[in-house]
Amino acid sequence: MKKQLLYSCLIAGATFIAGCTKNFDAINTDPTKVSAGGLNPNFLMAQAQIKFSNSGYDQLLFQSMWPQSLASTYDYYGNGDKYVYAGSGRGYFERTWNTSYGSSTLIDEMKSLIKGNASYTNLDNCGTILRVLIIQRITDAYGDVPYSQAGQAKAGILNPVFDPQQSIYSAMLNDLDVATAALDVSKDKPSSDLFYSGDISQWKKLGYSLMLKVAMRLTKADPAMAQKYAEKAFAAGTMASIADNVKVKADNANGNGNSDVAALLVKDDFREVRWSNVLISYMQSSADPRIPAVAEISAGTGKAANENPVAGINTASLQIGMPNGYDQLGGATDISKAPNYPGTSPADPAVTADAAAPDGKYSRPRVTVYDDRSRINMLYTYGECELLLAEAAARGWNTGSAATHYANALAADMQSLTQFSTDAAIPQSSVTAYVAAHPLSATTATALQQINMEYFVVTSTTFNFNESWANWRRSGYPVLTPVKYIGQFINGSIPRRIPYPLGLPSTNAANYAAAVSRQGADDFATRVWWDK
Image 1: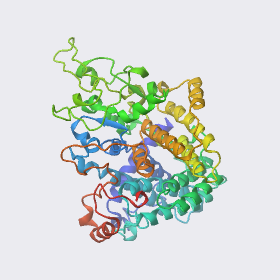
Image 2: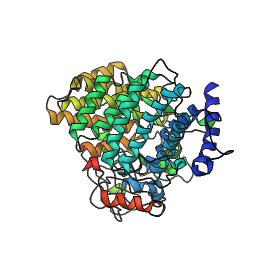
Image 3: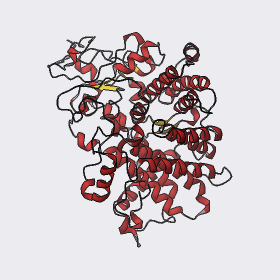
């Protein structure tokens, strides 16, 4: 009941704040001015957590298929699967910007309301950590973006500058350093925190774990800075178990249903969105016990059965990943022409007017694990953190034993799936045996491959596709073959960034132009700073 009340309050508060944040300069005077006395600032952080975590639909059409975690033959999934504009694709690629900045604006407003109030010091510092988590996603996708002047419309900054990504990363690391060190378990804790219920010790671990993630993004662009902050994060203390996973549970009954699930349960999506061949083949190559936990094929045959979201057959040996780049249009790129095509799922003669399902024998995300409208959204896991520490150690940095971190990650990545559903539980004996059978190589190049392929598996199977795409750009794993298709918005390569929202050249013209001049063409091929 308490949780339902919290969500109801957050929805009401979000409606009020959304109206205010559209025109901050209009709330400088009463009666529209928001004040700390009129609104509990804790609700603003909680609403930012809900909004940011529940943005999975933003990534489904693009980021899930660029690193080839998922594949699809359906029309509007061509945005990600085939690098062609389809459906409302141009609008969808703005969602990462709009949703994420909408979340960070709530944090900026919260920090403005509590400024100078010592009783909110922990809330303020937790807000800084959350803001970095949000802004990292934005800058990783777009490159140079507003950071130093973001969220300052009330101060009169309506056209914020686009900070160079190099400056953003330096600022994020410094902000994390200051805020995390300042967290104090003896002081008041956030009262509406959806990550850790206000546990400051867990927030401190998150702050240093996020410092590690931000640092490791710089292994190509600034390895010295990456090493400095990775070692600092490890020394200070990072996540210790899957209890520290950063996640928010959706609440469909109270209007906060999971957006991933809402999309995937649309008939066309459910019928034609599948795990990729890259992912399933890699997992099968090592007899990964997660396969039956995350994948299934339809229990029935034909189109109707493949549109019916009921539990399928999850036998590991029957799972087949779908290759990216195919359609159902009957031409050279028809799915029936794909290598090793398993054949169509024939129409069920017992179903009136049923039709064949060309994708029906390919593996989809398991219904009972991924299709609960109130399931969690995972943002960052202990396993990911351990993989980053393993990579840092494999590079010769002072972050402990690479082999130990890698083993910890393998076990944690399997165990974390139970936070989606107990149906994804893997017997501990299977976990132990798999970890023992797959030690980290002592050869650096092979170790880096193992670590980053596991990073691909865990971020894919936890539906954190933004991170799958970002880490592919940084590490080069998995090694992918770009899709070739008629009418692509990028030719010959997988997208490296997302273009800015279409309205920016007119609404923030000078700063947009400066960013493009500094960074490069505003298209899918230009690499962000840390990817060059």
